[in-house]
Image 1 (cartoon, rainbow, N blue to C red):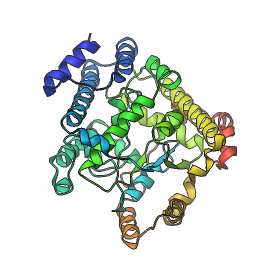
Image 2 (tube, rainbow, N blue to C red; image 1 turned 30 degrees about the vertical axis):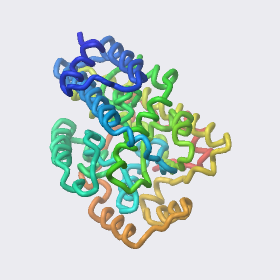
Image 3 (cartoon, rainbow, N blue to C red; image 1 turned 90 degrees about the horizontal axis):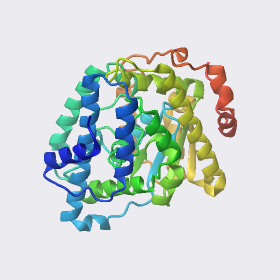
Image 4 (cartoon, helix red, strand yellow; image 1 turned 30 degrees about the horizontal axis):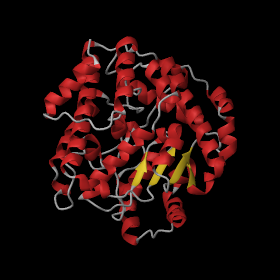
Length: 383
């Protein structure tokens, strides 16, 4: 059995470092290890891969803290008014984040940075950074292990990625439930965990990334922020948000199927009905928390985007978003966005197919369960 002390020792040995920084990560790590040990249904190979991932996350955390130790001036960096995308997953948010990333005036977390933020990138060498090739190799391995992932989340080594990996370095992240049956950890994360330290760590990594590699106008995206919106807003009080919307009867089964694609590489006994319910639960909880946050005087900070019109033609939506921000959508940025869209059509790698019933989900029941959300934002049913 792998325990917390052994994981910490392995990370120290792998890096030659021993300062993990703030102890905020220890609670989540302990609960995660206990839940995975007690509840996950790993194959031997899946178990080894899961715990190796935890060692890698700890190793990355050690390296972040080592850079701060050697260069305390990094902390003088400011993260000013980031634009953060949130809302339900599988709502076109990835496509929007990739389009926004084409603007050369903005900064995103690129896949290769998300995997390995250290050493911090530099403007002069970023295009030739060896981590790009390493990330590409990792994504090719992912495609072999999870062949349907390209249909769900098409991406490259240099395309934008969510901050899940940075949250996972503090061990408060949905990253883990995507590949492991860990109901104990999920219950703690959704209902008890304090995410303020986690978002402070995320801010810490963002400062590191922009230190020697501007620009500093951040464009971030992570649907799981809906669950922790109060903590997010406490750490980023000047943030503005875009929020994507889509029929929950299309969203929830699609997310559950994404989780299944990831989980089956780790386990031969994946509980599809648990994946359906855990997805529906976090989507409902996130939307209820989002509505409460917006209704508490924060509605003006949000720009809402509906799935169908965005899919039909994203450019009027993007132009309106830039107007909301009071920023210029330059001809260069628009041309780069148009090229990305031409080269990355929807369903480029095939259509993502799934059956809601496989996950114990009924579309009519989902729509009724989420009526509070669809009526609040005027979200139409699909089909």
